[in-house]
Every structure is written in structure tokens, then in C-alpha cells.
Length: 205
Image (cartoon, rainbow, N blue to C red; front, side, top):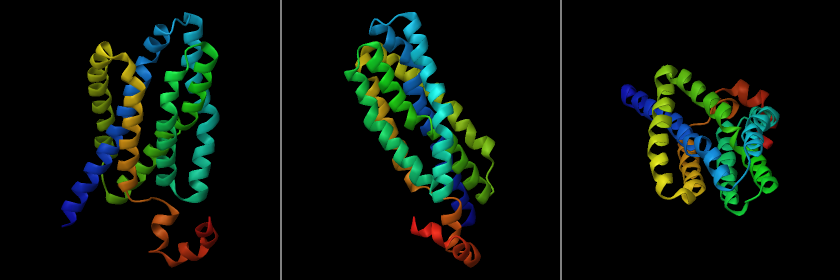
């Protein structure tokens, strides 16, 4: 029975890693082609591609702090996924540089928080279950490689579906992450009276 639970955990965590990189693989590699299709210049495309890492540097510490303060890393991940899923279709409404830049910043504000939080959650759950994270991490490499190949061919035929697919992938990722156990304070509070007593104020948040 213990082995069955361990295997199930490995599968769940493996696919958590796969699904994040599926979302990234649908979105990131094809942005420059989308910008080119809008008639944006090379300089504008460069600025737009730089917007995501700039936004990540600014916003990732905020999401990590919120998740740590609340002790609800999984819930924060799901919220970020759903917010990004709602924002992705706004790319369809933006056709000039400034609107596209605003949409990119808005989307990246949520999407860029997913990788550090999901990695942190998966690493903690893997450690708790005695699982090898390096094997789980291979899911990301496999997922990214496969999705880029498949989506690249699909976008050749129907480039307009990109952001709808991004939204769908994020919803699937959110649903999968919600099924994982929580990690951190809230996950342990019921089993550890000292933690429950010492962190009682957090349960009111």
C-alpha cells in the first residue's frame, strides 16, 4: 500500500512539472512570431520579449511572500493560473505596440509567479514522500519538447489558436495542482499541535 501511494505521488508530481512546461511551451516560443504577424518592428519585438523577465524580477518575490505568509502555496498557484488564463485572450484584442505591452505585463504579472511556486511545492512534496526530484524534473524537459513540436505544427495551420490553447493549458494545470496536497504550515498544522498553536493567527487569514 505504501508503494502504491508513493507511485501515485510520483505520477502526480511528475505531471505537475509536465503541465507547467506545457503552458510555457505553448506561450513563450511563439511570441516573436505573433508579434511579427502584427507588423511590429524588431525593436518593438525585443522590448516585448524583455518585458516578461523584467516583470518576473519585479513580481515573483511578491507572490512568494504572499504564499509563505498565508501558508497556502497551492491555492496561490491556482489563483495565478486562473488569472493568467483569463488574461491570455486579451492578446487577441491588442494589435499595436502599447496595448500588446500592457497585456504582456498583465499576463506576466501572474504567469511569471508559477514556476518558482510550483517548483517549491513539488520539491517539498517530493522530499516529504522520499521521492527523487531529478526524475520529476525530467517531466518538464519532456513536456516542453513535445508541446513545442506539436503546437508549432498546429500554429502553422491555425496561428490564431495560440492564446486559447494557453488558457486551456493553464486551466488544466490549475485543476491538477489543486489536487495535490498543500505543503508548509497548513499541511502540518493538523498533525502537529505545536505548529497549530504557534501559528494559530495564520489560520484566521
